[in-house]
Length: 152
Image 1 (tube, rainbow, N blue to C red):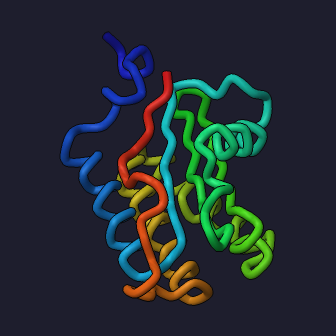
Image 2 (cartoon, rainbow, N blue to C red):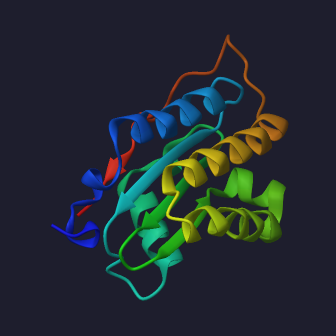
């Protein structure tokens, strides 16, 4: 079976999956923000941002208390990528921040180092979330699961 014929979940070793989940958990331990990673083989939409927005809604990430959820979307086979931040964090960081994150992840992807790239961007997003939505152990709860979501 060739690499591109594998299911999205089979494209990553257990160690790589753990690397991404650890980045999510470490980032979320510093902020009230929520980060999710959704990986699938092919993007069924023309635009990856459109797909990310669709998934953001399906995952009900807009239900975070401070509207500070972020979805990192990757379609490996069709080479699509989008990072979508809810209104609370998007308004504070602006469009340029999100575009910069996509630009920063591309060199990792160009070297087929997807897990390392995703983990690095999750950590950068976590730093931005920490700045605007610092962790408060009295009121912060984990509003969404930390595991990677694998599509088809």
